[in-house]
Image 1 (cartoon, rainbow, N blue to C red):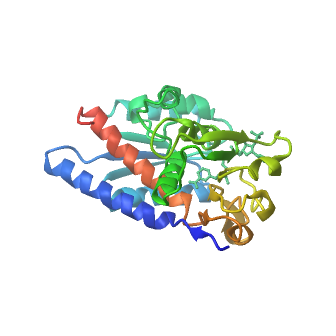
Image 2 (cartoon, rainbow, N blue to C red):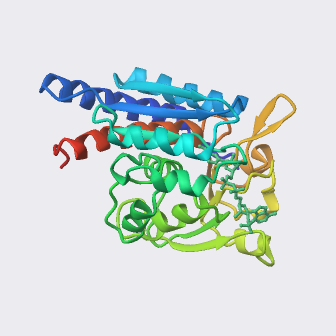
Length: 290
Ligand SMILES: NC(=O)c1ccc[n+]([C@@H]2O[C@H](COP(=O)([O-])OP(=O)(O)OC[C@H]3O[C@@H](n4cnc5c(N)ncnc54)[C@H](OP(=O)(O)O)[C@@H]3O)[C@@H](O)[C@H]2O)c1
């Protein structure tokens, strides 16, 4: 079997096109141009690339973005002050603090300080709580992007056994939470696996849908995948000068019925969902959300 490739780049381009239409409509009707403020602390090259891609995506849909670059040695109180000023700035709709932050800064304190109404990454505990309760203000970008890929590829999620490999706050846990909700692209029976899981391959082999988010290059091998499963590879790992996922793409493609590539799978969708959240933030703040 050779799996169908789930083309995240193509789906993300379509989502951006829809969003561009909504942004143009908003502006035509006298609304403000949605505005994302991105904060980059330090000079991590991968973070710089992610932020640049997010800025480009804003430009493509007609949104404004502002990049605030701070030196590596920025203190926690300086960063908290900046976030407070962005919270208070009515012209800013969404705030994104690119992770990871330098070790002198407590990430949780900083993320908690972002106004929940401007928390377009959906990391704030208030937004995570609302999402868990099935009444989301925002949806977390990477898991939401994965869910959209499942829907777009025609995967039947309701009643399927989904195994999420990884339990991070950013990907694994919210991914499992979205898949178990009532609604489109959800209603799955969900298992979460992690580094303490025993007999991992036995569990992943039960998955109709396998989401890999562990940060280990090509960790998921063909013998860990049930024939016909849909495999969503969230991993982004640099190996030499190549980017690879958490799944052995070549081998698993021979077993799965559909699979996302790396790059060009989940990554572009994460950014598209961030843009979607920024428009939603603008709508919420101006009382125009439906
Ligand atoms: N495509 C995108 O847009 C996007 C967005 C975010 C992240 N990513 C990528 O996705 C990957 C995961 O990111 P993350 O932030 O979730 O990573 P993370 O915070 O490092 O979490 C990794 C998770 O994988 C589990 N794990 C590690 N080794 C394992 C093993 N041998 N067997 C089973 N479970 C194992 C860990 O278990 P424990 O909890 O027990 O330690 C942890 O829950 C990374 O490659 C990251 O770059 C991509």
